[in-house]
Amino acid sequence: MSLIKTDAIQTLAGKPIVNSTGSVLQVVQKHLTDIQETTNSQSFVDTSLTQAITPSSTSSKILVTVTTQANCSSGGDVGLFGLNRSISGGAAGDLGTGEIFAANSPGGDWMPINISFLDSPSTTSATTYTLRFKSYAGSNYIYHGWGSNTGGSSQIMILTEIAG
Image (tube, rainbow, N blue to C red; front, side):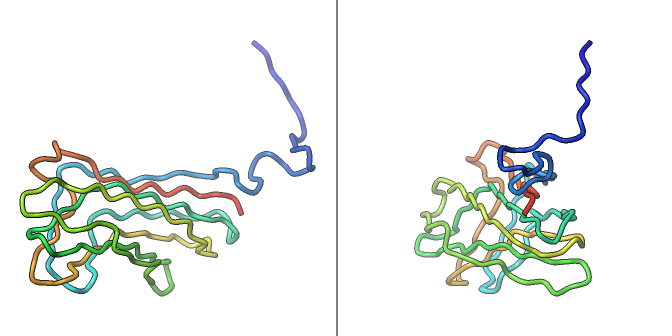
């Protein structure tokens, strides 16, 4: 058995390797299977895909990665998806929304939804991220999660704290 002891390991620039800018400090995830959520609301509603993380430093960044699926009840409608951030003891706020999938015809293929967002919450309080969705037209339903032709797929949210 070998043992190496040292006081510090540094980059060529003299910065510590552990916890240096860009280092991954922690990773947490939410993994759901066999859920399906539906809305025809024209206001954003929360999905079950939500996860909390407590940053170790106010300079940390949080990389939010979401993978799920979506479908529409009718061609011509569009589902809008976005992320919401809620900081314990503070105000919640949307991190941005966007039209990230186009409408399908009824019974059509489920569309993959992949979101990556680098956030700077500037806190060491528990921070919760939630996937939200809504119907653009409101007259049709938007489905998120599992569908009969997705084969019992997974919905995943991964939060990665990166040293800032």
